[in-house]
Length: 455
Image (cartoon, rainbow, N blue to C red; front, side, top):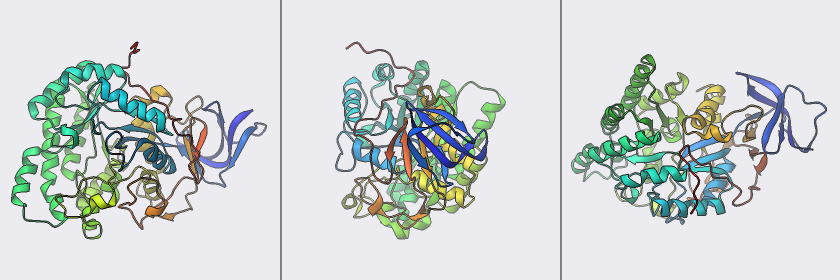
């Protein structure tokens, strides 16, 4: 008997939206066809004409464990992901301790293996640990970064010389460098100029468009010099977007072997600096909220295929931590559970087509981060049955009470989202309106450098 048969659904298959049915067996997609009459399964799901699409792959989350579990942990974070239609995450290294060596990697992996209900990769941190990057790569990290060009949690900020040395090492390993592009000098100069300005908007002015654009310029120069494969995290400005679009065009024209990609975050697509008055300190994140011109450029970049990935940069803090003034409140907002629901509303409103949603939330992140080697990100027979079933007619108002992060709040309060009715991970239903996935069922997905560890 097969495991699950999804009937009365629409699928985006062979480059078109069409009616179909999906058969799942032993964790894999067994068949996709217009009609699977004669096939049976232990469980039937009637989608009532709704969509069945690949589950999201969020390559930028901070689940805060170890060290900050009052904000989030691997169980609560993975539950939030599952409830929002995310089947795989890549967790970034700036926990306490950060993932900068064998001991810290093993500590995080042990916690994730015990608690995560979804599959996951783990990124390695880059700081004053250049001599340990090769060891981290061999342990199976997905990629390196965020690599911070400005100060950050866990003291992972790099100056230009150390950044160049790190990129050279990462290139030699054949790994991917994930860059957080903000210029430390511009940020510090602006902090001095605006030290008496406690309006929320001052955060956008301190970490200005120029602050991001200058850092992207420097990082592109260094990545070109070192020939390292580079992925830019959470690009937010019109100026940085323009630089990356030009660089990608040049690399494509020259048929260069060096990889270049970048992601944008939902809060830079669906929020802007006009939301400062509503959100106050709860809208503080790095990079910060931007003007409407930048938002429009990023949305257009999804449509013209310049944007490669949409990732949440899920960075939860408790409400009590976010209260206070704009300079003392920590940066970061929760977002893993609302990524897919917001993007689906974007499709419904014709901001971008369904094909692009699937590319930027599934197939592209799987390819860029090597997760396709684990059967991820491909809606085809023989690949992992990581799927979500959702009804595009069922638009809900986002409310913090319905969400699963320990943060207990959302910057999207009152906005519209289309949430999954089912989230399926490797052929198992892990969300059906309630969390039904077993704690610790998530698999670690080792990176390309992984070697057998005999210790």
